[in-house]
Image 1 (cartoon, one colour):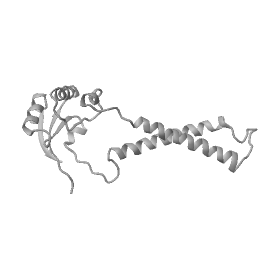
Image 2: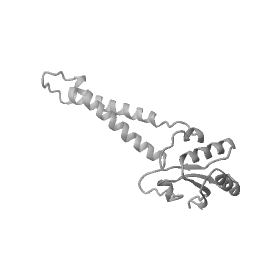
Image 3: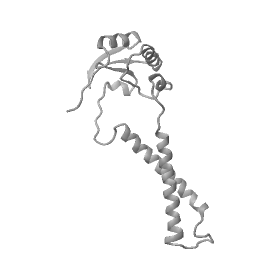
Image 4: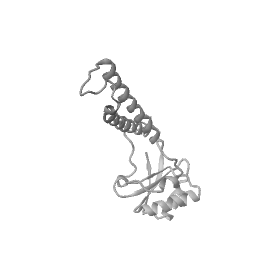
Length: 172
């Protein structure tokens, strides 16, 4: 049986209104469950107190793994397994390895980061995430409060006072 949350959410027409509301909530120490936007908003993460993503560290590790795979694989194939001299090149010609090494570095980093992103965010085949309001993915901005940690009436009054044009309740 899934856990259900009762939430109160407000819809905003403009990202500037949303940023102002999040700032006011932070100043008043009101616990926001989540903020939903149709596109990334510059400056929202620090206002919500979110730390910088560490996905770039994973990208570096995956890229290094791709570099090692390409370089060691070509070294073994061309110098040990099937040593053929062609075009006057030595068996172990490092400059000739650079294009394939670069391509595998990019391939491993990109695929690794996508898979890591999907796993961390609980996305993937068969996953059904609840939708609060379909307009959020189109052109509206949303602040949601969990009624377990915030009083419903105070959340509704906060949303109205900060310029939300519509305030609703929902169980997700």
